[in-house]
Image 1 (cartoon, helix red, strand yellow):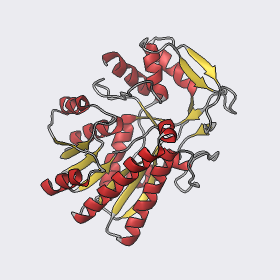
Image 2: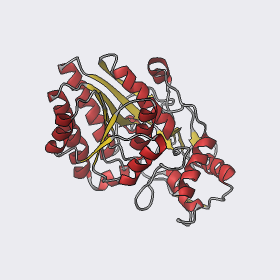
Image 3: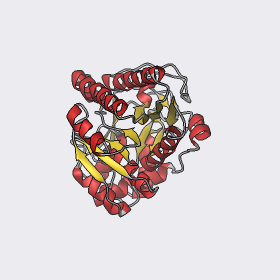
Image 4: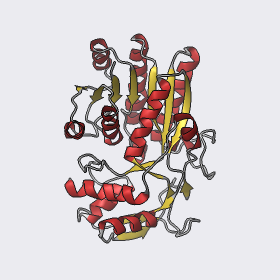
Length: 331
C-alpha cells in the first residue's frame, strides 16, 4: 500500500519522495503548490525513473483530502504540508494557524476515519524557542517565539492527545534543525520565491550574481567569530531520516519526538568560508544588527535518533555547500 506525502513538491518533501521511491516504496503526493512548483515532481520522476500518483489539493479542504483516501488504500502519511516562514508568520498569524493547524486537524480526522494511524510529522527545532542549553535534547523545555513555531508545538500537542485517546496511533515528531544542500543530481533543491529567508539560498544567489551581498545579522554573539552558530544538515540526510522514522511508526505504536541534526554547529562565517572553498566564488557580505529573537548557538543532540531510528547524518558541510551550488548553477 502507498505512503501519502503531503507537501511532497516542497524542498524537504521532494527529496524525501526521491529517497522513498529509491527504497522501493509506492507513494502518493498531495500538494497545493502554495510554496512549490509542479516541476519539482517531474524532476523526482526523472531522478528515480519511477512514476507516482499526484493530487492537487489543499489540506484545509476536507473534500480534497477525502478524495485521496477514498480512492487509495494508504498505509501511512508523511506530513510536510504547511507554511514555514518565521518572519511571515509574525505578519500573518491567522494564515499560519488556519493553514497549519486546520490542515493537520482535517488530515488526522480523515486518517482516523479510514483507519490510517501511522504518521510522520514534520516538526521543527523552533519548538525549543530561545533555549541557551546546548546540545538540545528532545526533553529540553519547549517554548516558542513565533506563530510558525507555535503551530508546530500546538500540532505536537494535538498528536500526543490523539495517541492518548487511541493508543493504536503511531506517530513520529521530527524536529529539524537547519536543512541545506540539494540532491547531488542538481535537479531539485531549495527554490524560494522572492528574497530568500534562509542562509544558504541567499549565499548561492549572491554567488550567482542575483543578489548584491549577504546580510549577516550580528557579529557580537559569544561565539568563536561573533556570528550565530546553527546545526546545518544536508537535506538528503534529513530525507533518509524520514524513511527510518516511517519504518519505526509502521512497526510499533506510540508517539515520540526525534531531533534530526548533525550535532555540530557552524557559524555564519564558517558557512561562507566553506562555500567559497568549494565554489571558488567570493561572497560579499555586510554585518548588520542582530535580528530580534535570534539566539547565539543552537545545535542538536541527535543521540535518540541514532539509538532508536538507527539514523545519523552522513554528509559534511562542504558537501552541503557543493550540492547547494550545483543546484544554483543548474537552476
